[in-house]
Length: 203
Length: 203
DNA sequence: TTTTTGAATATTTAAAAGAATTAGTCAAAA
DNA sequence: TTTTGACTAATTCTTTTAAATATTCAAAAA
Image (cartoon, rainbow over all chains, first blue to last red; front, side, top):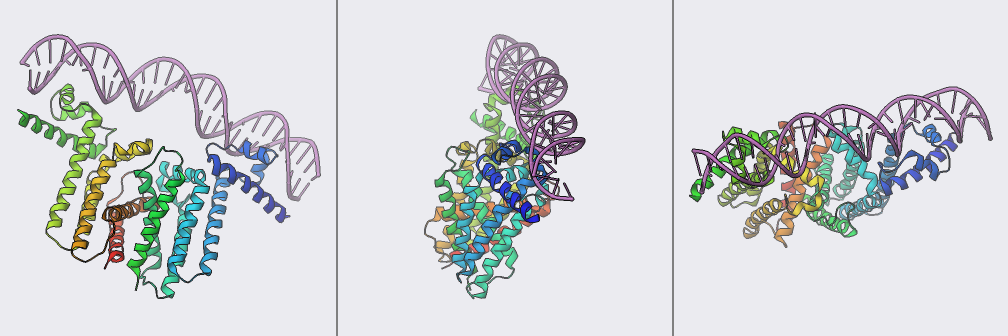
């Protein structure tokens, strides 16, 4: 029973994710998603209450994948630096693979920064909590010293975000979709940043 | 001759700055600025070719004030940390005092990130150069070790920007104008960030 | 009872047209 | 050289209408 429902929901998520990641939320219609799955539009609403809800489910799915991947890697290493660098690379990869998916989230924020708590807020917190866990590896290892794990993780995450907005502010080539070089560029800055940051926390 | 022209231009800048800082570029008309100065609109165009040019002149004036203030302070101290913390505080102050002035710049960027080179780009570079100079104090002092001053200054600046965007993304109260507490909050994060960053560069 | 659909409705977006505001010009006066 | 009032051009704001798309629902299929 419920097994079948979950399976169908997963299939829908899969297809919707492809469309959203490729064309973005705005340029994807429910009709198109339904057609991809070769069933009726109305059935989509049987499994998901509305488009926004479907989008959020896709977001959650993508974030989960990324977080799980990083957590699994983190179990195989005891060095904070390795763990964090892996996390940074995963974030870059996820971002470029799903660029247009995230665009809707940021447009939501632009329009109404106040309601961030509902939209991207929870995802931000989950990522921050992960960085908190990663930093803890270093603390347990006596590599670094951190007073407030959560606060420091947030600080680090803000810095990483800064690399992104900073670079997109400076040398954007032709706009629209950041080029592979730009992703590389951002990531390289982020890596340098992480190294300085960690050294700043070292015992 | 030219002395009088400069004086008049300065007066115009003064008035325009007040309007721009208070109501923003969009909500300020050339007619209003002219009325404030009790002379005709046409005369504004005698001293400044167009509104955008006038705006840029105001921007430059404000940035200059901030940079000068920081440079002067920097001469009185040999500690990088003091210099940087002063710079951070000055930036906060300038930002809150001229919040709506900057809003136009960011809206320009939102619309067309490509042409950033023309608009805010130069100002960004001047601030980065200043941070470069400030870091050099620490290098000369043997407090810190830096390979590439400019690159590191840029990194630092991006991190500072991250604190700003990060916090405005998270806990914005009622939107529109950030509250004094929010400025405080951002600045406190920036200060913590700078300290970790500097420690990460320490010899 | 659960899943699926076609057709109907309700919202949102897009485009067009017109009015109103505001930027920018110019010939002439001070 | 500096200043202005009157003029034109460009931009923004509203309103309207049409089209696209999200969402609902009663009924059929499984």
